[in-house]
Length: 508
Image (cartoon, rainbow, N blue to C red; front, side, top):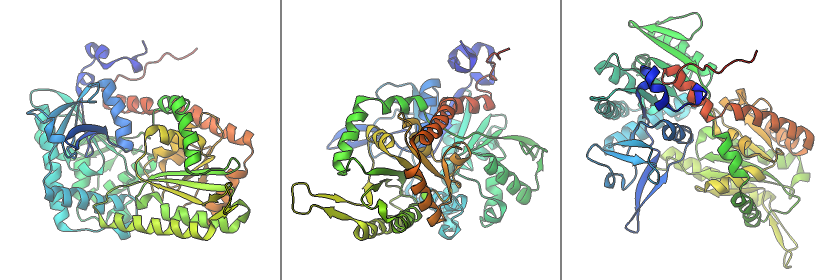
């Protein structure tokens, strides 16, 4: 058996650090429990982090520490606040952390989502800083660190902390257990010094992250931005290759590991009869005529995804190319997020108003009053969560997918679309401000701020010859098949020493 794909249990006799249990730490939990009409139900939560890490934990086992945000989460944990997951076929432990209202409002909704999130995504006018947020963020991180230390009590393990919600956890864990191995994966972009300097607690965050042994970023550009911040604000000693930082007598290794998706799972699902049936259902739902070309966007209702600029570009497309009115429809799947934050509620309302305005100006009804009457709208706006079969059906049937993030660590929608394009007829348009653009080089790369340029790219995608579409998509699918979520997780675990170095034999 290839060592890179051997079960960890088989590797344990020869390894030391790699024998440790994996302890993943994140704000969001992979599964939550709710009560619906007095019946206890569970569901897998959404998001790129969950999609990436749940398969890893199912494969390797261990413990995942996360905030118990489900309304009935307390009903199912044991005395150590642990529940086995997935609930239908348990393979690892979920240890839940309980946050009080101040920590939720100030630490999670405040400092994490209204300070760090817009700061990392360079939407600086949306940063809403309050000193109280910082104190709540400290308390929230201390609660997570306590859970980690409790999990390590009497049992060894490798701690893998994820994302901007928990930037202080590495420093807190290392302060208590200096020899404890800790890695961090930073899923969002990392801003350069000119933006990061607006954060009053920039030094505290940098020092905590540099307490970790391994610090992972989505791209080399984000890694470089972190190094520049460490130089600027801490005066650190950086090795010539920018991949090691020495600070306070401790060395932190830095790596870039672009996250991915399960290519095989998406590709196989797209071919199922359920997805084929779902495509027929969706065509009827949206009243798609056979000759209508379909564009697709799938995003959380977050301002970093560039939805408003995307719709302005679609407006410009129908203005510049009126011949496509009635012949092209853009479907936007919009997933609600952070509805308890006013900035997000206002943004959602503005998106709805913009879509309605465009549909009013360009929409049409043909054969009015007859049994053959049909309507056409330029934008089909579907707000809410959808099932995975429905999502795969949208991915497979879309002639083009538009990812127009104003800034994104990676954007896994781009990769899910490619993995689901089993007919290899679609075209991916991806923002040059998203990490995915660095890998999926056969996509049409767009500038989300250049509305006319995006409109031109939509026209180019629609008019692209089938042979070119298939060549581009085939190359991206071939790349993604070998750079999937399994490859990503194995590389991260090799970096951490959990798995041995890749020793696949070379061909002579």
